[in-house]
Amino acid sequence: MAAKWDAAINNADFDALLPLYTADGRLMPPGAQPVTGPLAIRDFFAGRGRSVGNHKVELVDVLPIGNYAYTTSHFTATLVVNEKAAPISGSTVRLLERQPDGQWKIKSHIFVRE
Image (tube, rainbow, N blue to C red; front, side):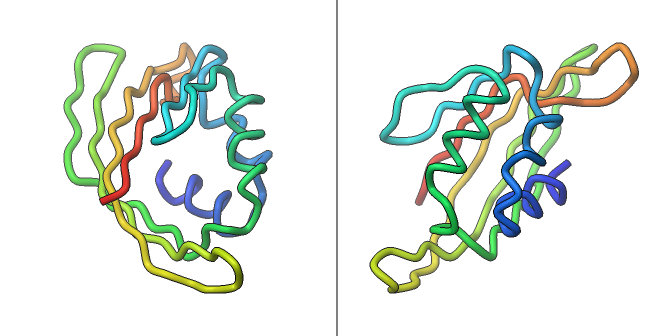
């Protein structure tokens, strides 16, 4: 899942985020209001355009609990503001939910920059 998420952000293919989230999936970004649902999450990232690139999520830990799993990750990326690129990094916590077909989707996603 991390590779698909990275590819969506790095290729500015924000529609590729849609199948990664549950219908009631929630994103809680730093400094912004939470958004709910795959369309709103896609629109949040699409609104940032290509300001984030070279995104890479590295899984740190997984805690499975029945049909749910908590994951913690570390990410690195490049942030471009006013044509100036700067490295950024941070952490994510995601709650995944197993779907009836066995796929895992993101139900809750929070990230913070270091």
